Length: 204
Image (tube, rainbow, N blue to C red; front, side):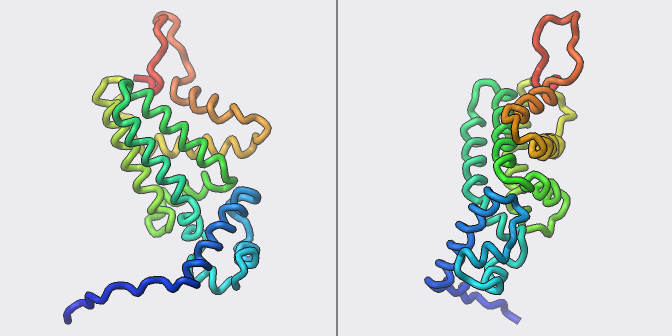
């Protein structure tokens, strides 16, 4: 039987307005209360019923995915700029720092991204996959330059950045903590006193 080639029907104007209001209210609620904010409250503030929210976003991760599309675009754009940086390893570290900063803006986002990385059915996978691809390109360039060990994987680095963002959620009074932890993790714990040169950020 031939498959239908009928294009998907465009969203009605009122449905589009409802969706946009839901995303806007979700962004504000996630920023104020974390990504576990009440979906019922988000729907109420958007002026719709919870059923309307679920018609647009079947689960919390689907709503989170819509909320974070702008931030994802910014991170991907930054990765493309950094792909031409003179120092590939420094470019990779800068990009990882940007991910930590983004994940730290919303309580619970780091944990959700960690869960999505292990669950291909999660709606957040559409955020994780392009981030992984962008990071792999930066990491590959740093490996080629000889500044990063060959056994470093982008999956491990993304887990590390999410873990750092998750850890800093517990210390909101110390805004510099995320940067310190990232530098510590990437430089390693043990310095070589016989070598006066600073170690490569990724231990290479």
